[in-house]
Structures are given as C-alpha cells and as structure tokens.
Image (tube, rainbow, N blue to C red; front, side, top):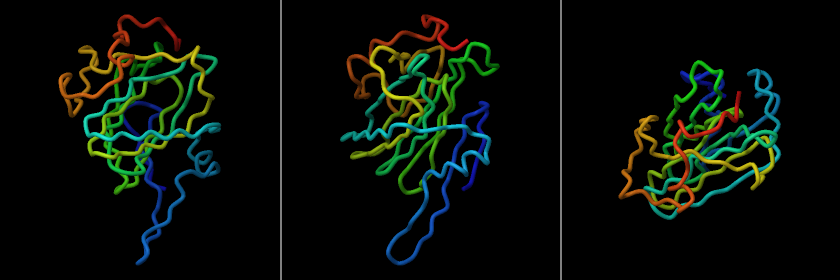
Length: 184
C-alpha cells in the first residue's frame, strides 16, 4: 500500500496495490495489520455507503462528538469526489485547517482521518458511490456538523452555493467560530 502523509498530522492518503489482468483488478482496501504497521490503531465497526445521482452533491461537513467520535477510511467505489477533512482538535497546531483530496474509483485512493475531524465531500461526477468505514457506531445524539462553505475555512469546493445540492440540515450547520470545544 502506498502511503502519502498530508500537511495535517494523522490524515493519510492511501493507495492500495492493484493486481490487474485482462479481467480487471483485485486489491485489498483494508488490512488491519497493515494499518497497525503504519501506527494506526483504527478498529472499524461499521461500513457506510453513499450514492449521489448528480455531480455537485455536497455531503457534510459531519462529525460525531465523544464518546461516539469517529475515525474514517473513505473511498470512491464509483465516480469521483473532492473529499475534505477539517481539524477540530483545539490543541492541534492545525486546528481549523483542512485537507482536500480528489478520490476516484479509477485511481483507487483512499483518505484516512482520525477522530476529531469534520468530514465532507462533493461529487465530481454523476452516479458517484462513496464507501467509508468508521471506528464508532452512528449515534444521532452525538451527530454534529460544520458549515460546508464557512468563509473562515476557505475550502476550494468545485461548486458554489447556487450550484451545490445539499440537504437542508447541511445548509444550517454552524461556522467554525460558533462550534463548542468538542475535541480538546
């Protein structure tokens, strides 16, 4: 597995090795011992699958607070996304900064983000499917969000507010400056 460290500690871009022949390819997208060798103590308990019909669909920025905070391993199974992780750890030197990575089914790359990050993505192609593993179970009571287009974050989304397809809930999330200190 090829590993690329990002400018934010703990956030990694992973590219599993593909074994290709005339039929297509095979790859291991997750292997616990390979993660452990990287120093990652991620124990995944749930797999999620998202399908978006249109390009320009924005989902996020989502996170869960302790004790149900989640680390994630994200990949595009079909299509492509701009995947974004925003550091919400107040004591971190990268608090309020983000990593934005293009993930595609064609390339087969993945993004790993530990607990303490808001996560979201924008579909770059129609009929995009995103699969992600999480380290804690979904809890509606602990679910929170961060405004996807908070000007203080300056995330270079490939779509503007008028062109973005969002849920009403995602349009109403607070800005970073309005968030309580969830991850001290």
